[in-house]
Image (tube, rainbow, N blue to C red; front, side):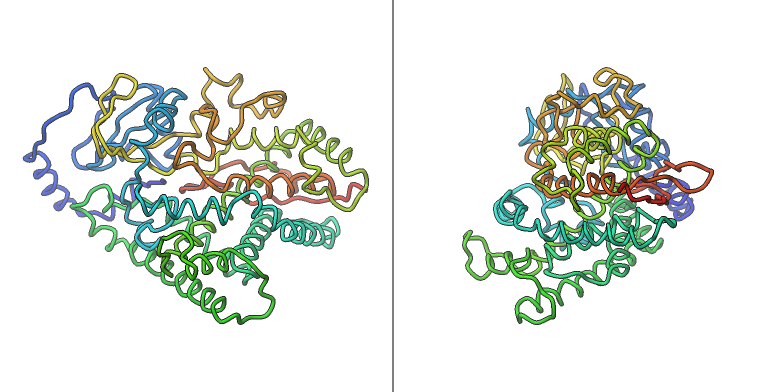
Length: 491
């Protein structure tokens, strides 16, 4: 979540704030005892003024003062912030069931058909059914492997584009986004779609998911979202995506369209709908929500991770050289490194793990919500408390990581720590019931693309200003400036 306090203040009327402030003073509720420590809050807005534009960094700073389990208030909503391994493990393992719910948030609800996707759906029978469909039918190991030819095709196409640039400036970030979008379009929808138009729509969706909805956290000021135009923007993007997905589904039902590949994810979901094989009635809007979820969760997070990995390698020439030597040894002059050969590249895997440690795709994992009162690290946590896990801060915890701010892929060599949710000092994809089900799909793309880029090309930054590592704000934090490189063929 990204929040600009100044924008919020300017969009609100002072006299209305004063009225609501008076109301908050007059209202009272029975306080809970032994709550986690909290920074002092202002009436009505709580701790919003302390978050700034880089929320994950601000929450890390708060945790350094108040401890790894901190209770803050976003508007009138209490939010528990976990910034340590022990706290994360308690939430996503020990008390995983209690914290498996999602809060009802305005923007995801509008985009994902009343949160009927996988990521934002509230915990219950519906979520169990759609997650089971995703894990068993859409993202299984067998299914991921069945789309190997798609990844190979798009990787070869990207290499060809870089070669045609003939060592002139290449916008690598743009090519990475295009590759991931094409892979997901072909896998999910059966064919490529207009690259720039589709990418812009996805980018707007991800950006809106990172916006602060006043109505979600200060219900009495929900009109601010309408006044600021936020609701209109969200509804416009939701409508545009809905029309696009409606056309895709109709095309699949009618078996029309040139170049449609067989057995894509829409085909599979429509088959499940027809056969009712799970005993679960899968409606059209649910199919749309699931597909949209896979796109937003997969495309931008995958390209973002690759962007950060390449940026770190360009800043650390020795690591780049080490990875390139491993790639050249593996490829042995062949046209491409294949997916089968990726298992023989431990340094490649170490580079990607170290990138995910420093730059998790979602620095703040999607919020959880407690479904009953529970004791957590000695504190009493009331039912209905929203919970945020700061994966970014945990990955930089100096008590768990030596030189945590430094890029050192070697720390993951001969190291069992992995990103699959079993090691809570390293949780870029979350853990427990609400952990990301698409890890394998994302990581095979990351490994294939990075291995072949350094295998085929010597990459060098363009210009004298070096590489800008500043971040954007939003639910997914990516590089603010694209990576511009010259690419010289290795052989």
